[in-house]
Length: 443
Ligand SMILES: [Cu+2]
Image (tube, rainbow, N blue to C red; front, side, top):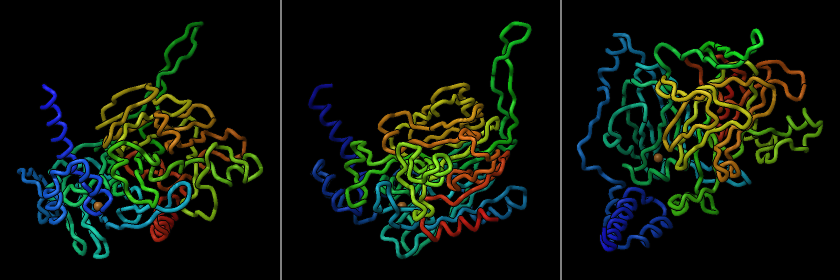
């Protein structure tokens, strides 16, 4: 390819990227996009005027006609209603201050949907008239064109239904305004997870250990039943200007402001109470960064994940962001990685989860101690992707297995083969939402 043609293709790619991702509602971003592709001004204006990109391609919209759902339910399918409300709200950010978040139901990430393979998910998205922009929804557990669901205008609501055919973890997210500004909406918080449990349940976990028998080292298959304690860890990035607005230029450069796990940078680290338990002094930090550490922070105060030794753990990991996640637990080996109920790896140190991809990590913590789950990209670790697991009672504080509560947003909703856990309210969510969560976990 000669230089002139290759320059032209680059220009074309930039133009298409500009069309797809131009944020319709931020003047700064529009200006930035215009500067790089001045000849696309009229197209951008047209998109802005119609409030998004109308896809001209034929759609394969495999949704269930809504009037058929009831008869399918009587025939034996289970129907799970998912009700999402778009809510733009300012939420706290590590280091103090707030950023302009876009949420479903006042929380980041959005509520985790948990169903069984073969269930019908009937999703209704409501966009209150107070919202400044339309919103959409794309559920990766479905297999249908997002184009046909389209944008829901402020003051409207819209429903679609589909059968969750494939087990595993699947992202769902706002599809922006007919795809335009989708990056802004998703990276500002409009994302969530659907867990589709396998119809016949999860598989028991077999971990190979060694033993000595008759003077010989031998392999010993250690079996754990499918029943497990479960966590959800959703990775994403924030790209923000100094005033907490979405910064599209930073996104194009992959210039991450903070890396977040379930919405928080460093949201699952010890807090003052745990400092006090261990050091006898609330102000003596036992972890290098404790940015969410004050009882005044209520649902935002950080909280580590307490785990038992010798128990099967199932961690649903989803990469909601723009950067790869090299999922690793410092001091542990992941006993099994599963996608679509098929084991992808056993005994792996790290597992790569690409953008908009998920995986189920099965492991057993054998020894008491502190383990840190990271995205093993140093930029991600140091900007927020460090999640502390405290296994057993390594500090000899006297608590027993399951005594310590875990942060509610990291505990998966109950499904097939779940072992319940004690929970404490923790979420990047509004006070109203925190009150609802408090009610739901107290019984
Ligand atoms: Cu949206």
